[in-house]
Length: 154
Image 1 (cartoon, rainbow, N blue to C red):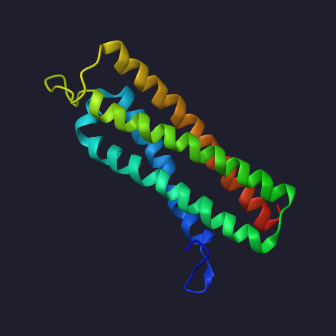
Image 2: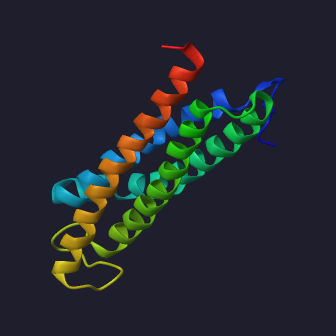
């Protein structure tokens, strides 16, 4: 399933989803956490990206593992896979925190949250989202950079 699409390797196609969705989730999670005025506009995109980004990373990771079977192991492939593994766990954590934040932090001052929590919990979740967003953005960069260096030899 993760090997080929229309006869060409699937990994170069699937990786574009991760490259787009991870930074979008990171950006929207940070905005939702630190800018209350944006919440009523970006709550549903936050939820959508929190569901889609980990799926995109998982599919990219699995298709990359299928592709690496064709080329064998090398230190560059191992480093690329290590970055991708870390990215998957960090983006999964960011997705969970984003979903918690979407339902715990009120959309406006007048609205109530679906999950009742002390205000300090709102700040803690928002801070955790910011940290996970930065780490996820770093690992999507490192994963893509190591992959590009393997392909293009730069």
